[in-house]
Length: 460
Ligand code: 2HG
Ligand code: ZN
Image (cartoon, rainbow, N blue to C red):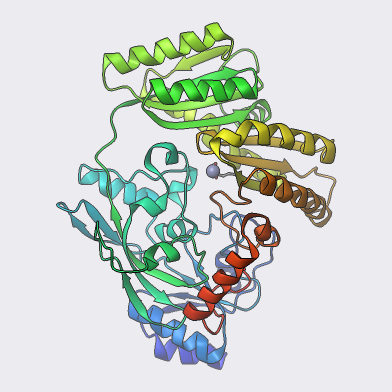
C-alpha cells in the first residue's frame, strides 16, 4: 500500500479490509447504470461501526470523499465512484444480529441482501414484505438509502414503513441511535426518516432494526390482457375494491416482446397493447370466487380481452417472470431509464400527455413502458439503437427528460419514484422540489456532513 493516506487508514481502522486491485476498483466503483468509468482510490470493507466512524474521521482529515456501497443494483448512479473516492462497502457487515419475537423485529447489518432478510423473517414464521426483482443482490443499507419500493408497495408501503430503528454514522463520524425500535416516540424530530432516502449523502447506516409482518396469506397471480390505458385504470379501480391486492403491475406489448425474446413463455396467442400482473389473497373459496367474478365482469365490459389465473406456485412464478424479467431483457440495449410518479388518479391524463411527448420526440426509438401502476409509478425505458453511440444517445434523451420534468411539474409528479436522484436525475430535481426545499436540504447536509465528504455530487 504505497499511498500514505491508505497506510494511515489501515492504522486507524484496523479491522477494515482495504482493496486496491484494479478489478476490485472496477467492481465496487459502479452500479447498474454502467455510464461512468469507475475510478475509486480504494475499497474499504469495515466490519464494525467503530471502524466506520474511524473511516469517516480519516476521510474528513484527508479530504477524501466517501461513496457508501451496498449491492450496487441502483439505477441512478448513487453508488458510482469515478473521482478517487473511498468506496465503503458493507459486504462484511451482512449478518442477522438479533430477532425479537415480542416486538417482531429483526436487527441486521446494512450489507445483508434483501432476500436474506426475507428468508430470516420466514424462519421465524413472519415476513419482511418489501420485495422486488433485485432481492438477491441488493442490500438493506441500499434499500434504506433509497427508500426502496418495488412490487408490493400497494399493500405494504415502502422501506420507510418497516424501519423501526437505525444506527447511523454521520458525515462528522458521530454514531447516532435513531428511534431504537419504538412504535411510539413523540420526542422531537424523527431523524430516522431524514436518513431514509438520503442516498448516502448524510452518512452511513451501520445497523437496522426492521419490523416484520405476519406471514402473507396464500395468493394467486392473475395475468390480464388489456386493450387500452383507460381500461387498465378501470380494471385497477375494480380490482382494488373486489380483491385484497398484494401487487398490481403493468407492462406493454413492447415489454412482453423483449421478455419473450429473452426466453420467457408467451402467455396468450395474440398480443395485446397492455398487460396487468395482479397478485391477490386467495386463502378461501370466497376470495377465489371474487377474482373470477371480477375477471368475468371486466371481460364483459371489454376492459380485458384475455386472462389467466395461476393454479400452482410454478405458474405464479412464470407469470411474475413476464414482469420481473423486463429489466434484464432490456439490459443489452443500455436503456435510458425514467422512473417517474404521479398521483394514481392523475395517471391517465399524464400518460396521454406523455404518449404525445414520446411519439413526437422519439419517433424512431424503441420505448418500453412498465411499472407499478397501482402506485402511480411508471418505468419508461428508451432503448439505445445499436448504431448510436452512448454519449449522443444520452444527450438526446436528456433533452426529452427536460420536457418530461416540466410535464411532471404540471401534473404534480416526481422525477424519481423509487430509484433515487443519484447522478442521473440531479439536473431535474428542481422540477420536483421547490427552491426553498432544496435550500433546506443543502442546509441539512451542511449540518450532518459539514466537509461535504458523504457521496458528494449525488442528489444535490
Ligand atoms: C422494476 O420495477 C425496477 O422492475 C426496475 O424498478 C425498473 O428497469 C427499470 O427501469
Ligand atoms: Zn420499479
